[in-house]
Image (cartoon, rainbow, N blue to C red):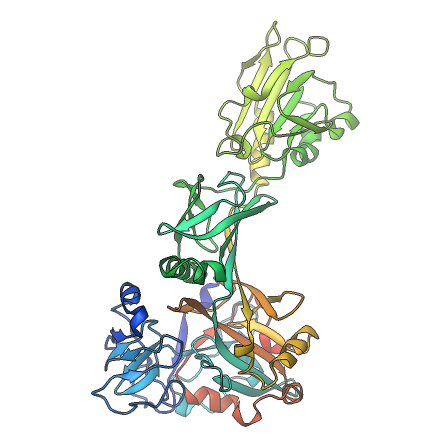
Length: 548
Protein backbone atom coordinates (compact mmCIF):
# COMPACT_ATOMS: atom_id res chain seq x y z
CA UNK A 1 0.00 0.00 0.00
CA UNK A 2 1.20 3.47 -0.78
CA UNK A 3 2.77 4.82 2.40
CA UNK A 4 0.79 8.03 2.17
CA UNK A 5 -2.45 6.17 2.82
CA UNK A 6 -1.22 4.93 6.17
CA UNK A 7 -0.71 8.25 7.88
CA UNK A 8 -3.33 10.96 8.04
CA UNK A 9 -4.53 13.86 10.08
CA UNK A 10 -7.74 13.58 12.07
CA UNK A 11 -10.78 15.79 12.04
CA UNK A 12 -13.09 15.64 15.06
CA UNK A 13 -16.84 15.96 14.68
CA UNK A 14 -18.49 19.27 15.41
CA UNK A 15 -19.64 17.99 18.78
CA UNK A 16 -16.03 18.02 19.98
CA UNK A 17 -13.94 20.95 21.12
CA UNK A 18 -10.41 21.92 20.22
CA UNK A 19 -9.03 20.39 23.40
CA UNK A 20 -10.55 16.97 22.78
CA UNK A 21 -8.37 14.21 21.27
CA UNK A 22 -8.98 12.92 17.78
CA UNK A 23 -9.38 9.39 19.19
CA UNK A 24 -10.22 8.16 22.67
CA UNK A 25 -7.16 7.88 24.87
CA UNK A 26 -8.83 5.51 27.35
CA UNK A 27 -9.17 1.91 26.19
CA UNK A 28 -12.71 0.70 25.82
CA UNK A 29 -12.89 -2.99 26.71
CA UNK A 30 -14.74 -5.49 24.56
CA UNK A 31 -17.53 -7.05 26.57
CA UNK A 32 -21.06 -7.61 25.39
CA UNK A 33 -23.96 -10.01 25.46
CA UNK A 34 -24.81 -11.21 21.96
CA UNK A 35 -27.88 -13.27 21.26
CA UNK A 36 -27.71 -16.64 23.00
CA UNK A 37 -26.77 -18.84 20.05
CA UNK A 38 -23.62 -16.82 19.30
CA UNK A 39 -22.32 -16.16 22.79
CA UNK A 40 -19.83 -19.00 23.25
CA UNK A 41 -18.49 -18.91 19.68
CA UNK A 42 -17.85 -15.17 19.73
CA UNK A 43 -16.01 -14.91 23.02
CA UNK A 44 -12.56 -15.72 21.60
CA UNK A 45 -12.92 -13.28 18.69
CA UNK A 46 -13.16 -10.08 20.75
CA UNK A 47 -10.15 -7.78 21.12
CA UNK A 48 -9.93 -6.60 24.75
CA UNK A 49 -7.72 -3.67 23.74
CA UNK A 50 -10.10 -2.05 21.25
CA UNK A 51 -10.17 1.76 21.21
CA UNK A 52 -12.35 4.20 19.34
CA UNK A 53 -13.60 7.75 18.88
CA UNK A 54 -16.92 9.24 20.06
CA UNK A 55 -19.26 10.06 17.20
CA UNK A 56 -22.61 11.75 16.75
CA UNK A 57 -25.08 9.57 18.69
CA UNK A 58 -27.64 9.95 15.93
CA UNK A 59 -25.38 8.54 13.21
CA UNK A 60 -25.82 4.82 13.99
CA UNK A 61 -27.65 2.38 16.17
CA UNK A 62 -30.87 2.16 18.11
CA UNK A 63 -32.00 4.79 20.62
CA UNK A 64 -33.01 2.00 22.99
CA UNK A 65 -31.45 2.81 26.39
CA UNK A 66 -29.45 5.62 24.79
CA UNK A 67 -28.19 8.25 27.18
CA UNK A 68 -28.21 6.13 30.33
CA UNK A 69 -24.57 5.53 31.16
CA UNK A 70 -25.28 2.75 33.67
CA UNK A 71 -27.15 0.25 31.48
CA UNK A 72 -26.53 -1.95 28.48
CA UNK A 73 -27.59 -0.73 25.08
CA UNK A 74 -28.58 -2.82 22.10
CA UNK A 75 -26.71 -2.43 18.80
CA UNK A 76 -28.69 -2.97 15.60
CA UNK A 77 -25.78 -2.55 13.15
CA UNK A 78 -25.77 -6.25 12.24
CA UNK A 79 -27.92 -9.34 12.89
CA UNK A 80 -25.95 -10.29 16.04
CA UNK A 81 -27.68 -7.42 17.91
CA UNK A 82 -25.29 -7.33 20.86
CA UNK A 83 -26.21 -5.89 24.24
CA UNK A 84 -23.19 -3.76 25.12
CA UNK A 85 -22.12 -2.85 28.65
CA UNK A 86 -21.03 0.71 29.46
CA UNK A 87 -17.47 1.41 28.29
CA UNK A 88 -17.32 -1.76 26.20
CA UNK A 89 -17.52 -2.65 22.51
CA UNK A 90 -19.67 -5.16 20.70
CA UNK A 91 -18.43 -8.42 19.20
CA UNK A 92 -17.16 -6.71 16.04
CA UNK A 93 -15.27 -3.93 17.91
CA UNK A 94 -16.89 -1.46 15.49
CA UNK A 95 -19.56 -0.13 17.88
CA UNK A 96 -19.36 0.63 21.58
CA UNK A 97 -21.34 1.94 24.52
CA UNK A 98 -19.93 5.40 25.22
CA UNK A 99 -21.76 7.03 28.13
CA UNK A 100 -24.92 5.16 27.25
CA UNK A 101 -24.83 6.06 23.57
CA UNK A 102 -24.26 3.52 20.78
CA UNK A 103 -21.12 4.85 19.10
CA UNK A 104 -19.24 4.01 15.91
CA UNK A 105 -15.67 3.49 17.15
CA UNK A 106 -13.69 4.37 14.00
CA UNK A 107 -13.57 7.70 12.16
CA UNK A 108 -14.80 8.05 8.60
CA UNK A 109 -11.87 8.02 6.15
CA UNK A 110 -11.74 11.03 3.84
CA UNK A 111 -9.39 11.05 0.85
CA UNK A 112 -7.61 14.22 -0.13
CA UNK A 113 -5.90 14.54 -3.49
CA UNK A 114 -2.29 15.70 -3.60
CA UNK A 115 -1.64 18.90 -5.55
CA UNK A 116 0.53 16.89 -7.93
CA UNK A 117 1.53 13.25 -8.19
CA UNK A 118 3.53 12.25 -5.15
CA UNK A 119 3.25 15.67 -3.50
CA UNK A 120 2.12 16.32 0.04
CA UNK A 121 -1.46 17.40 0.55
CA UNK A 122 -2.56 20.70 1.99
CA UNK A 123 -3.62 19.57 5.48
CA UNK A 124 -7.17 19.81 6.73
CA UNK A 125 -7.78 21.83 9.85
CA UNK A 126 -7.53 19.51 12.82
CA UNK A 127 -10.82 20.58 14.36
CA UNK A 128 -13.88 20.46 12.17
CA UNK A 129 -15.78 23.37 13.68
CA UNK A 130 -13.03 25.65 12.40
CA UNK A 131 -12.98 24.04 8.98
CA UNK A 132 -15.09 25.87 6.40
CA UNK A 133 -14.30 23.87 3.27
CA UNK A 134 -11.95 26.59 2.00
CA UNK A 135 -8.66 24.80 2.66
CA UNK A 136 -8.93 22.70 -0.49
CA UNK A 137 -11.26 22.62 -3.48
CA UNK A 138 -14.31 20.40 -3.06
CA UNK A 139 -13.18 18.43 -6.10
CA UNK A 140 -10.05 17.39 -4.18
CA UNK A 141 -11.95 15.75 -1.30
CA UNK A 142 -13.74 12.39 -1.39
CA UNK A 143 -15.67 10.83 1.50
CA UNK A 144 -15.17 7.04 1.52
CA UNK A 145 -17.24 4.29 3.05
CA UNK A 146 -14.39 3.29 5.37
CA UNK A 147 -15.70 3.88 8.88
CA UNK A 148 -19.07 5.16 7.69
CA UNK A 149 -21.30 2.41 9.10
CA UNK A 150 -23.87 0.27 7.34
CA UNK A 151 -27.51 0.56 6.29
CA UNK A 152 -28.49 -2.54 8.28
CA UNK A 153 -31.33 -3.41 8.86
CA UNK A 154 -31.76 -1.99 5.38
CA UNK A 155 -34.87 0.13 5.76
CA UNK A 156 -32.91 3.37 5.91
CA UNK A 157 -30.77 5.44 3.52
CA UNK A 158 -27.00 5.01 3.39
CA UNK A 159 -25.05 6.63 6.25
CA UNK A 160 -23.85 9.46 3.99
CA UNK A 161 -25.20 10.78 0.73
CA UNK A 162 -22.79 13.59 -0.09
CA UNK A 163 -23.29 16.32 -2.66
CA UNK A 164 -20.31 18.29 -3.95
CA UNK A 165 -19.45 20.31 -7.02
CA UNK A 166 -16.85 18.87 -9.39
CA UNK A 167 -15.84 20.88 -12.45
CA UNK A 168 -19.14 22.73 -12.38
CA UNK A 169 -21.25 19.58 -12.08
CA UNK A 170 -23.24 18.78 -8.95
CA UNK A 171 -22.17 15.24 -8.08
CA UNK A 172 -23.55 12.86 -5.46
CA UNK A 173 -21.61 10.09 -3.74
CA UNK A 174 -23.55 7.52 -1.74
CA UNK A 175 -21.25 6.28 1.01
CA UNK A 176 -21.74 3.12 3.03
CA UNK A 177 -20.15 -0.05 4.34
CA UNK A 178 -21.51 -3.31 2.99
CA UNK A 179 -22.00 -6.44 5.07
CA UNK A 180 -20.88 -9.13 2.61
CA UNK A 181 -21.42 -12.86 3.05
CA UNK A 182 -21.18 -13.31 -0.71
CA UNK A 183 -17.52 -12.35 -0.79
CA UNK A 184 -14.04 -13.78 -0.95
CA UNK A 185 -10.52 -13.23 -2.22
CA UNK A 186 -8.80 -14.25 -5.41
CA UNK A 187 -5.12 -14.70 -4.61
CA UNK A 188 -2.37 -14.68 -7.25
CA UNK A 189 0.93 -16.12 -6.04
CA UNK A 190 3.87 -15.36 -8.32
CA UNK A 191 5.89 -18.57 -8.34
CA UNK A 192 6.82 -21.47 -10.58
CA UNK A 193 6.80 -23.79 -7.58
CA UNK A 194 4.02 -26.30 -7.12
CA UNK A 195 1.80 -25.40 -4.16
CA UNK A 196 -0.89 -28.05 -4.63
CA UNK A 197 -3.05 -29.74 -7.21
CA UNK A 198 -5.95 -27.85 -8.73
CA UNK A 199 -9.12 -28.24 -6.61
CA UNK A 200 -7.04 -29.06 -3.50
CA UNK A 201 -8.57 -27.59 -0.38
CA UNK A 202 -6.91 -24.72 1.49
CA UNK A 203 -7.03 -24.70 5.29
CA UNK A 204 -6.62 -22.06 7.97
CA UNK A 205 -6.70 -22.95 11.66
CA UNK A 206 -7.51 -26.50 10.54
CA UNK A 207 -10.69 -25.37 8.75
CA UNK A 208 -11.45 -25.40 5.05
CA UNK A 209 -11.48 -21.83 3.69
CA UNK A 210 -11.00 -22.24 -0.07
CA UNK A 211 -9.22 -24.16 -2.79
CA UNK A 212 -6.45 -24.08 -5.38
CA UNK A 213 -7.83 -23.00 -8.74
CA UNK A 214 -6.41 -22.97 -12.27
CA UNK A 215 -2.85 -21.64 -12.57
CA UNK A 216 -2.09 -18.54 -14.59
CA UNK A 217 1.08 -17.58 -16.45
CA UNK A 218 3.91 -17.68 -13.94
CA UNK A 219 1.53 -17.78 -10.97
CA UNK A 220 -0.43 -20.16 -8.78
CA UNK A 221 -3.98 -19.12 -7.90
CA UNK A 222 -6.20 -19.58 -4.85
CA UNK A 223 -9.89 -18.89 -4.40
CA UNK A 224 -10.61 -18.17 -0.74
CA UNK A 225 -13.86 -17.52 1.08
CA UNK A 226 -17.22 -17.27 -0.58
CA UNK A 227 -20.65 -17.77 0.93
CA UNK A 228 -20.26 -21.57 1.13
CA UNK A 229 -17.19 -21.31 3.35
CA UNK A 230 -18.54 -18.42 5.40
CA UNK A 231 -21.97 -19.87 6.11
CA UNK A 232 -22.27 -23.42 4.76
CA UNK A 233 -19.66 -25.47 6.62
CA UNK A 234 -20.54 -24.70 10.24
CA UNK A 235 -19.79 -21.80 12.53
CA UNK A 236 -16.20 -22.75 13.33
CA UNK A 237 -15.24 -22.96 9.66
CA UNK A 238 -17.14 -19.76 8.91
CA UNK A 239 -15.33 -17.79 11.60
CA UNK A 240 -11.94 -19.18 10.51
CA UNK A 241 -12.72 -18.12 6.94
CA UNK A 242 -13.87 -14.70 8.09
CA UNK A 243 -10.77 -14.07 10.14
CA UNK A 244 -8.39 -15.20 7.39
CA UNK A 245 -10.12 -12.99 4.83
CA UNK A 246 -10.17 -9.92 7.07
CA UNK A 247 -6.46 -10.25 7.85
CA UNK A 248 -5.54 -10.93 4.23
CA UNK A 249 -7.56 -7.98 2.93
CA UNK A 250 -6.15 -5.75 5.67
CA UNK A 251 -2.62 -6.43 4.43
CA UNK A 252 -1.64 -8.75 7.27
CA UNK A 253 0.17 -12.06 6.71
CA UNK A 254 -1.84 -15.26 7.00
CA UNK A 255 -0.64 -18.86 7.07
CA UNK A 256 -2.59 -21.48 5.13
CA UNK A 257 -2.00 -25.14 4.39
CA UNK A 258 -2.83 -26.66 1.01
CA UNK A 259 -4.21 -30.19 1.08
CA UNK A 260 -1.31 -32.56 0.23
CA UNK A 261 0.67 -29.47 -0.72
CA UNK A 262 2.62 -26.52 0.59
CA UNK A 263 2.34 -24.33 3.65
CA UNK A 264 1.95 -20.76 2.44
CA UNK A 265 2.49 -17.44 4.21
CA UNK A 266 0.60 -14.87 2.17
CA UNK A 267 0.57 -11.10 2.52
CA UNK A 268 -0.81 -8.73 -0.11
CA UNK A 269 2.00 -6.88 -1.84
CA UNK A 270 4.76 -9.12 -0.44
CA UNK A 271 6.69 -12.11 -1.73
CA UNK A 272 5.09 -15.46 -0.87
CA UNK A 273 6.74 -17.78 1.63
CA UNK A 274 6.39 -21.38 0.46
CA UNK A 275 7.26 -24.14 2.93
CA UNK A 276 9.37 -21.67 4.88
CA UNK A 277 11.30 -20.33 1.86
CA UNK A 278 10.78 -16.85 0.45
CA UNK A 279 10.20 -17.22 -3.29
CA UNK A 280 11.91 -14.23 -4.87
CA UNK A 281 11.48 -14.52 -8.66
CA UNK A 282 8.78 -15.28 -11.17
CA UNK A 283 9.86 -17.38 -14.13
CA UNK A 284 10.97 -15.47 -17.23
CA UNK A 285 8.46 -17.50 -19.26
CA UNK A 286 7.85 -21.15 -20.03
CA UNK A 287 10.76 -23.23 -21.34
CA UNK A 288 9.72 -22.71 -24.94
CA UNK A 289 9.42 -18.94 -24.49
CA UNK A 290 12.85 -18.82 -22.87
CA UNK A 291 14.37 -20.65 -25.84
CA UNK A 292 12.84 -18.10 -28.18
CA UNK A 293 14.06 -15.15 -26.12
CA UNK A 294 17.65 -16.28 -25.65
CA UNK A 295 18.36 -18.59 -28.62
CA UNK A 296 20.51 -16.07 -30.48
CA UNK A 297 22.58 -15.46 -27.35
CA UNK A 298 23.16 -19.18 -26.76
CA UNK A 299 23.74 -20.32 -30.36
CA UNK A 300 27.38 -19.16 -30.72
CA UNK A 301 28.51 -20.57 -27.36
CA UNK A 302 26.85 -23.92 -26.64
CA UNK A 303 25.65 -26.89 -28.71
CA UNK A 304 22.42 -27.65 -26.86
CA UNK A 305 20.23 -25.93 -24.24
CA UNK A 306 17.36 -27.47 -22.28
CA UNK A 307 15.18 -25.03 -20.34
CA UNK A 308 13.40 -27.06 -17.65
CA UNK A 309 9.83 -26.07 -16.89
CA UNK A 310 6.84 -27.82 -15.36
CA UNK A 311 4.60 -26.54 -18.15
CA UNK A 312 6.67 -26.65 -21.37
CA UNK A 313 10.32 -27.69 -21.39
CA UNK A 314 12.23 -26.24 -24.33
CA UNK A 315 15.04 -27.83 -26.37
CA UNK A 316 17.13 -25.38 -28.39
CA UNK A 317 18.18 -27.46 -31.42
CA UNK A 318 14.67 -28.87 -32.00
CA UNK A 319 12.83 -25.61 -31.36
CA UNK A 320 11.84 -23.48 -34.34
CA UNK A 321 14.15 -20.72 -33.07
CA UNK A 322 17.12 -23.09 -33.24
CA UNK A 323 16.12 -24.36 -36.67
CA UNK A 324 15.87 -20.82 -38.07
CA UNK A 325 19.28 -20.00 -36.60
CA UNK A 326 20.73 -23.09 -38.30
CA UNK A 327 21.87 -24.83 -35.12
CA UNK A 328 22.98 -28.42 -35.71
CA UNK A 329 20.67 -31.06 -34.11
CA UNK A 330 22.21 -32.62 -31.00
CA UNK A 331 20.35 -35.94 -31.03
CA UNK A 332 19.11 -35.45 -27.46
CA UNK A 333 16.16 -37.61 -26.38
CA UNK A 334 14.09 -36.36 -23.45
CA UNK A 335 11.49 -38.03 -21.31
CA UNK A 336 8.01 -36.58 -21.36
CA UNK A 337 5.40 -35.98 -24.05
CA UNK A 338 6.54 -34.11 -27.11
CA UNK A 339 4.07 -31.44 -28.16
CA UNK A 340 5.69 -29.77 -31.16
CA UNK A 341 9.38 -29.74 -32.10
CA UNK A 342 11.45 -28.51 -29.17
CA UNK A 343 8.48 -28.37 -26.77
CA UNK A 344 7.84 -31.10 -24.17
CA UNK A 345 5.01 -31.60 -21.68
CA UNK A 346 5.08 -33.71 -18.49
CA UNK A 347 8.84 -34.19 -18.26
CA UNK A 348 8.48 -34.63 -14.48
CA UNK A 349 5.97 -34.21 -11.68
CA UNK A 350 5.13 -30.77 -10.24
CA UNK A 351 7.23 -29.83 -7.23
CA UNK A 352 9.62 -27.34 -5.68
CA UNK A 353 12.68 -28.32 -7.69
CA UNK A 354 13.95 -27.26 -11.10
CA UNK A 355 11.44 -25.12 -13.01
CA UNK A 356 8.54 -25.97 -10.69
CA UNK A 357 9.10 -29.72 -11.10
CA UNK A 358 10.21 -32.30 -8.57
CA UNK A 359 13.61 -32.62 -10.29
CA UNK A 360 16.75 -32.40 -8.22
CA UNK A 361 18.99 -33.89 -10.94
CA UNK A 362 18.12 -32.43 -14.36
CA UNK A 363 19.92 -35.24 -16.16
CA UNK A 364 17.18 -37.61 -14.98
CA UNK A 365 14.98 -36.34 -17.83
CA UNK A 366 17.64 -37.05 -20.49
CA UNK A 367 17.17 -40.58 -21.83
CA UNK A 368 20.14 -40.63 -24.21
CA UNK A 369 21.85 -38.91 -27.15
CA UNK A 370 21.41 -40.54 -30.57
CA UNK A 371 24.84 -41.78 -31.78
CA UNK A 372 24.13 -40.82 -35.38
CA UNK A 373 23.66 -37.17 -34.44
CA UNK A 374 25.56 -36.51 -31.18
CA UNK A 375 29.35 -36.37 -30.85
CA UNK A 376 31.97 -36.47 -28.09
CA UNK A 377 32.65 -33.00 -26.75
CA UNK A 378 29.08 -31.78 -27.39
CA UNK A 379 28.25 -29.12 -24.81
CA UNK A 380 24.92 -28.97 -22.95
CA UNK A 381 23.46 -26.19 -20.79
CA UNK A 382 20.46 -27.02 -18.61
CA UNK A 383 18.76 -24.12 -16.87
CA UNK A 384 15.49 -23.45 -15.04
CA UNK A 385 13.02 -20.77 -16.11
CA UNK A 386 14.15 -18.49 -13.26
CA UNK A 387 17.88 -18.98 -13.81
CA UNK A 388 18.10 -20.15 -10.21
CA UNK A 389 19.14 -23.68 -11.17
CA UNK A 390 21.62 -24.42 -13.93
CA UNK A 391 24.26 -26.97 -14.89
CA UNK A 392 26.78 -27.46 -17.71
CA UNK A 393 27.88 -30.75 -19.23
CA UNK A 394 30.21 -32.11 -21.91
CA UNK A 395 29.58 -35.47 -23.62
CA UNK A 396 32.34 -38.04 -23.14
CA UNK A 397 33.40 -40.65 -25.68
CA UNK A 398 30.36 -42.77 -24.80
CA UNK A 399 28.04 -39.77 -25.29
CA UNK A 400 27.32 -39.56 -21.57
CA UNK A 401 27.01 -36.02 -20.15
CA UNK A 402 29.75 -35.18 -17.66
CA UNK A 403 29.62 -32.11 -15.37
CA UNK A 404 31.96 -29.28 -16.34
CA UNK A 405 32.60 -25.69 -15.21
CA UNK A 406 30.21 -23.16 -16.72
CA UNK A 407 32.04 -20.83 -19.15
CA UNK A 408 31.86 -17.17 -18.22
CA UNK A 409 30.01 -16.25 -21.42
CA UNK A 410 27.23 -18.72 -20.52
CA UNK A 411 27.18 -17.48 -16.94
CA UNK A 412 26.29 -14.09 -18.40
CA UNK A 413 23.34 -15.63 -20.25
CA UNK A 414 22.12 -17.41 -17.12
CA UNK A 415 22.38 -14.16 -15.20
CA UNK A 416 20.36 -12.50 -17.95
CA UNK A 417 17.61 -15.08 -17.57
CA UNK A 418 17.55 -14.33 -13.86
CA UNK A 419 17.58 -10.56 -14.32
CA UNK A 420 14.58 -10.79 -16.63
CA UNK A 421 12.52 -12.49 -13.94
CA UNK A 422 10.25 -10.06 -12.12
CA UNK A 423 10.16 -9.99 -8.31
CA UNK A 424 7.43 -12.20 -6.90
CA UNK A 425 4.39 -10.78 -5.18
CA UNK A 426 1.17 -11.97 -3.60
CA UNK A 427 -1.78 -10.16 -5.16
CA UNK A 428 -5.15 -10.14 -3.40
CA UNK A 429 -8.39 -9.10 -5.06
CA UNK A 430 -11.39 -8.76 -2.78
CA UNK A 431 -14.56 -9.82 -4.57
CA UNK A 432 -18.09 -9.18 -3.35
CA UNK A 433 -21.65 -8.75 -4.51
CA UNK A 434 -23.68 -5.68 -3.55
CA UNK A 435 -27.11 -7.15 -2.84
CA UNK A 436 -30.54 -5.61 -2.88
CA UNK A 437 -30.41 -4.64 0.79
CA UNK A 438 -27.24 -2.58 0.33
CA UNK A 439 -28.60 -1.00 -2.85
CA UNK A 440 -31.77 0.03 -1.05
CA UNK A 441 -29.63 2.46 0.92
CA UNK A 442 -29.01 4.22 -2.39
CA UNK A 443 -32.47 4.20 -3.87
CA UNK A 444 -35.93 2.89 -3.10
CA UNK A 445 -35.80 1.13 -6.49
CA UNK A 446 -32.55 -0.91 -6.22
CA UNK A 447 -32.62 -2.44 -9.70
CA UNK A 448 -32.29 1.03 -11.20
CA UNK A 449 -28.93 1.43 -9.47
CA UNK A 450 -27.73 -1.80 -11.06
CA UNK A 451 -28.89 -0.57 -14.45
CA UNK A 452 -27.11 2.75 -13.92
CA UNK A 453 -23.85 0.99 -13.04
CA UNK A 454 -24.22 -1.25 -16.07
CA UNK A 455 -24.78 1.81 -18.30
CA UNK A 456 -21.58 3.39 -16.91
CA UNK A 457 -23.56 6.28 -15.46
CA UNK A 458 -22.56 5.43 -11.88
CA UNK A 459 -19.02 4.79 -10.70
CA UNK A 460 -18.43 2.08 -8.07
CA UNK A 461 -15.41 2.45 -5.78
CA UNK A 462 -14.22 0.65 -2.66
CA UNK A 463 -12.66 3.03 -0.16
CA UNK A 464 -12.08 5.34 -3.13
CA UNK A 465 -10.11 2.64 -4.96
CA UNK A 466 -11.07 1.62 -8.51
CA UNK A 467 -13.13 -1.53 -8.94
CA UNK A 468 -13.94 -3.84 -11.81
CA UNK A 469 -17.66 -4.60 -11.99
CA UNK A 470 -18.37 -7.98 -13.54
CA UNK A 471 -20.76 -8.25 -16.48
CA UNK A 472 -24.16 -9.81 -15.98
CA UNK A 473 -26.70 -9.38 -13.21
CA UNK A 474 -26.15 -7.67 -9.88
CA UNK A 475 -23.20 -5.54 -8.83
CA UNK A 476 -20.34 -7.99 -8.34
CA UNK A 477 -17.02 -6.18 -8.06
CA UNK A 478 -13.35 -6.82 -7.42
CA UNK A 479 -10.75 -4.48 -5.94
CA UNK A 480 -7.01 -4.68 -5.31
CA UNK A 481 -6.82 -4.54 -1.51
CA UNK A 482 -3.45 -2.75 -1.54
CA UNK A 483 -5.13 0.24 -3.17
CA UNK A 484 -7.71 0.74 -0.43
CA UNK A 485 -7.16 2.87 2.69
CA UNK A 486 -5.83 1.20 5.81
CA UNK A 487 -8.48 -0.44 8.03
CA UNK A 488 -10.96 -0.65 5.17
CA UNK A 489 -12.01 -4.22 5.99
CA UNK A 490 -13.77 -5.48 9.09
CA UNK A 491 -16.27 -8.14 10.04
CA UNK A 492 -19.45 -8.99 11.80
CA UNK A 493 -19.43 -12.43 13.36
CA UNK A 494 -22.57 -13.68 11.62
CA UNK A 495 -19.99 -14.33 9.94
CA UNK A 496 -19.53 -11.82 7.12
CA UNK A 497 -17.01 -9.21 6.00
CA UNK A 498 -17.55 -5.47 6.14
CA UNK A 499 -16.05 -3.33 3.38
CA UNK A 500 -16.56 0.21 2.09
CA UNK A 501 -18.43 0.90 -1.12
CA UNK A 502 -19.29 4.18 -2.79
CA UNK A 503 -21.55 5.03 -5.72
CA UNK A 504 -20.77 8.33 -7.49
CA UNK A 505 -22.96 9.95 -10.14
CA UNK A 506 -24.32 13.33 -11.22
CA UNK A 507 -27.04 14.59 -8.91
CA UNK A 508 -29.60 14.56 -11.71
CA UNK A 509 -28.82 10.87 -12.31
CA UNK A 510 -29.23 10.13 -8.62
CA UNK A 511 -32.61 11.80 -8.45
CA UNK A 512 -33.70 10.00 -11.61
CA UNK A 513 -32.92 6.71 -9.86
CA UNK A 514 -35.36 7.57 -7.10
CA UNK A 515 -32.56 8.36 -4.66
CA UNK A 516 -33.09 9.49 -1.08
CA UNK A 517 -33.12 13.22 -1.82
CA UNK A 518 -34.02 14.25 1.74
CA UNK A 519 -30.85 12.57 3.05
CA UNK A 520 -28.40 14.41 0.80
CA UNK A 521 -25.76 16.38 2.73
CA UNK A 522 -23.37 18.99 1.46
CA UNK A 523 -19.69 18.13 1.76
CA UNK A 524 -19.35 20.62 4.64
CA UNK A 525 -22.25 19.02 6.50
CA UNK A 526 -20.83 15.53 6.03
CA UNK A 527 -17.38 16.52 7.26
CA UNK A 528 -18.69 18.19 10.39
CA UNK A 529 -21.24 15.53 11.31
CA UNK A 530 -18.82 12.80 12.43
CA UNK A 531 -15.13 12.39 13.29
CA UNK A 532 -13.02 12.00 10.16
CA UNK A 533 -9.59 10.63 9.39
CA UNK A 534 -7.96 12.42 6.46
CA UNK A 535 -5.47 10.50 4.32
CA UNK A 536 -3.70 11.25 1.08
CA UNK A 537 -5.23 9.36 -1.82
CA UNK A 538 -3.01 6.70 -3.35
CA UNK A 539 -1.54 8.44 -6.42
CA UNK A 540 -1.75 5.15 -8.36
CA UNK A 541 -5.53 5.33 -8.19
CA UNK A 542 -7.62 7.43 -10.55
CA UNK A 543 -9.34 10.16 -8.58
CA UNK A 544 -12.83 8.81 -7.81
CA UNK A 545 -14.51 12.19 -8.27
CA UNK A 546 -13.33 12.58 -11.86
CA UNK A 547 -15.93 10.32 -13.43
CA UNK A 548 -18.43 9.29 -14.61
